[in-house]
Length: 220
Figure 1 (cartoon, one colour):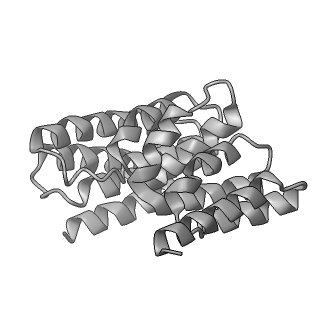
Figure 2: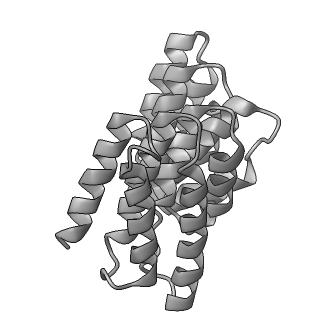
């Protein structure tokens, strides 16, 4: 048996075990085994399906596996994004935020602006600061970074402090690769200083995180 056939059989065995899982606990174990498969691309559709199940343990394992797969998981995630299944969409936002592929930007923008769950908005804010733009042409990087900035600037006014904390993290991540004089760096600095101001931001933990971000950016 060739290595390729061996990997395919290995994947088929784990997919079969996943399909035959008869309890919540078995599903968690089977999902974890899928994420460690020798032929990971064969498991992507199944990991995406898990996001729609009412099983948080399995969903966490699936998200971790999808993030580990990176850009290869983005297409299936976007294709099977279920607008009518809130749980699946929420987990998909977390996966897209962790992967950092620019193709997920639309979803992250919408999640930060409109999602009812603070934890989902928090993930989206972090994701907007962690998109991997370095391989894109400069014009595209500028355009996408502008959109990320606008999303974070609006997120700064979110009613939940955990989201505003994530906005500070997102601002920092967005500006770190940029020179201090870059216009986007200047806008990030403005946003962080607003989060640092007691008259603008009531949560001390958010102000502290904004201060950390400003110090790190100053040390570039």
